[in-house]
Length: 304
Image (cartoon, rainbow, N blue to C red; front, side, top):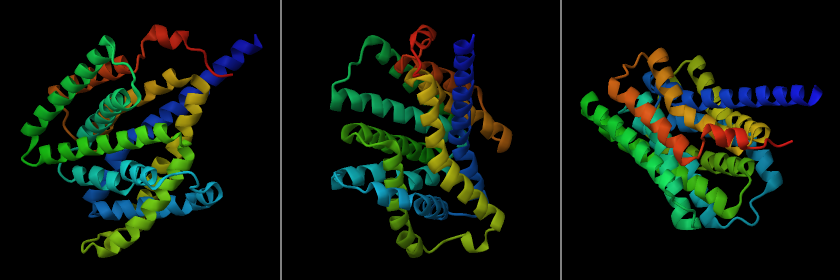
């Protein structure tokens, strides 16, 4: 029948958008780690990210404007997903591994967002959510233990990943508090971060851009400025529109495991038993906190 055929096509297309989003998100620590290995600095990566995405999204922001947004909202949005977040994430990758970022930052973001929703918006924390939070924390503890054994400075990078996750939670909570359209917020963050990163870049003494190859620079602009900053949001939004919020949230839960897999395959990082155990427990905790049980997914009605 035609309706079932159309529904199947919509499910397939939405899943494709979601999986592409997972790959883009999970590739962030890998692509960024590679840039640092090619002598770029965290500020180099930031300027390449925001100079490109900021210029692309500037016309959109000029059309939509910032009317109605208080200065506090702009500051929190930019700190949460802009230059401070980027420097914290990239700086942490100088000390710790890409797989640790992939597990720690998204998990910390979920924890802080869930607790922030409870404190700020009065969302309930039932026994199931508390169980999920406990599982996520347990997984993070296993990753932290692995970090202490991995090297003297790994724990410093892991702490920066925790801070990055907390910053992104601030961005998420700010979106909800001020009811800001995601694309408008993305344009605002990219444009303001571009304005901040240019003078900050010139004030920094060290830079590897002048000696980096054109291929390295083009890769960072293409991934950081276009794929990560813009297309990931567009694809994720389409996945949620086609599959529904609960099914869409599944893709976020897949990021830690995918990041670990990519780090092992692309960067040759060694994954320990603690890391594998951590990612399994984190995944279980994430789907518990989000209520992503199979019966709930099957019950949800997709948008038509």
